[in-house]
Image (tube, rainbow over all chains, first blue to last red; front, side, top):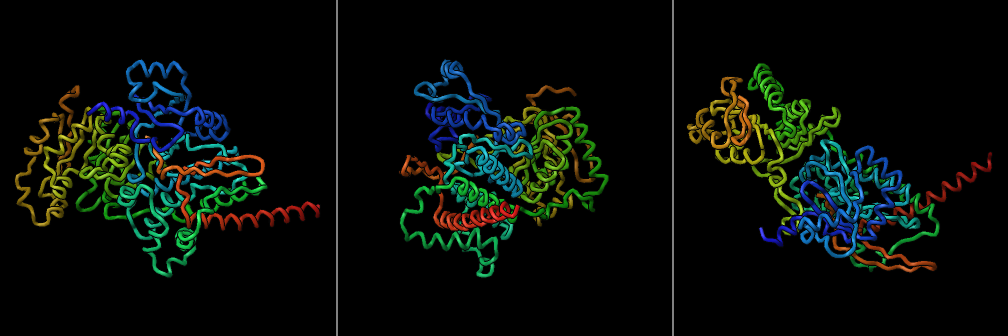
Amino acid sequence: MSQGTASRRAQAGASFRDPDGRLLLAEDRVLRLVSAKGAAGLRSFLSTNAAREFTAEGRLVGTRFLGSDARAALSRRGGGEAFGVEDGDGVLVEHERVAVRSFPYEWPPEMLHAAGALTLDLAERALDEGFTLKDATPYNVLFRGPRAVFVDLLSFERRDPHDPTWLPLNQFTRTTLLPLLVNKHFGLRLDQLLTSSRDGLEPSDVARMCGAARRLRPTFLSLVTLPHLLGAKQSSGGQSIYEPKRLADAEKAGFILRQQFRRLRRQLDKVEPGEGVSAWSSYMTPNRFHPTEYLRAKESFVAKALAEVAPRRVLDVGCNTGHFSALAARAGASVVAIDQDPAVVGALWRRASAEGLDVLPLVVNLARPTPATGWRNEENPSFLERARGGFDTLLMLAVLHHMHATEQIPLEAVFELAAELTSDSLVVEFVAPEDPLFRTLLRGREELFAGLTRETFERAASRHFQVVRAERLHETRWLYLMRGRGAVVDV
Amino acid sequence: MFLWGSSPALLSFSLTRSFAFIYLLYTDPGSGTLVWQLLLAAFFGLMFYFRRFRDFLSRRRK
């Protein structure tokens, strides 16, 4: 990687769009270099009751100002030039690190809704203290387990008390309300929508999807039809609507804003996703393919493996409704659980929220993981870049045969990737081609997998992993605990 | 990483009788959505006066 790329990477992926500051990642620390003006506003906001309350609740990221010696230390370490802290004014601020970054296009609808709710909570509360949010994108939010936390503190600024408008309303509508609306009513997947459309949807985009009757429904009328029609009329008008609006009466301006927030909250309630159901939702329910004894044996094996390995960070691939993610979380691990099906990921989020489990569920298909996106493909790193080396245990339960059969990824390649993702152990399930569910995936292509046996499976794993033990769960299914060849093994 | 989506900042300058504000339009306020917001603001403005009048009447009755 060139020096230029390295320095961009150090400050990459974030805040070049904000004139008041930019984010810097220094090893495990999250720093922000803030302009003098931005720092004054930030200090002011952090001293408010709103900021203290939300920080204490864990809904606003913890933040502290660093002294000038910290900036000097950073410069001396040789990172100064890369971080751009050597010259110029600016104050260094440190944020509490949120362990795992995730992006709106990896969230199930439930999490986007939660991010929207947090944004409105903060916007309303900040209003009480004379502040406003100057932007309302879901990229301001990360998740600690299932809990949303607002991280972009430079989004807060002092509000003009005579201003009755909230300019980020359009951004909030486009990036939160409209995606949830089309997901709820048309079944459009957020991962597909938001990966390609970072700025969400315009009302005119949604209007095109609607028939005449739907356009008149109250939620659509307010979110789609009227803004669409008014925008079409406005496009031929002047720029006067963009001039700042100020009222003589500050109380009236505040009242209007609060009513706008109440209206947005009602709209957010209306687009709240229901409990999704998909073909995978009842996968863990005992049936003729997954009898109760099989599920019990599997649970017992995984529980024992988790007790033995005692992982701190687990990645559960193909988590389904998160039965084993929950097991890992109760064993004391921080869990990231991924599945390609938004319905099950959403169900897992609901469960993790309700039970207080440290599980971050994401809509990610490991066979086609989320790519790097944004400017120069550096703003939002890919899932693999964020995940590599970030876990000490990987769970791949009844998923490997999907990758192998459906995506036709060679076993050796899957184990190679697994070795990059975990620094220690792997709990992996081998499903033989004779398995009835495996045969439904094959659809007559059994010959392609005739050579897939336990021996070939173990041989594919052996380059990167050592088998600690294996157990037969079922006629056609075995479960393995493996340790990485670089890991310390107690056998 | 903490990201926010935005279009390039627009600078807008407004003078009132007593002081000046520089507005940095950080996000794209949209057109139709902004007009709709302003129309709703006008409606809420009427609500504000209605409630003031209602509160005034309540105080008078007491």
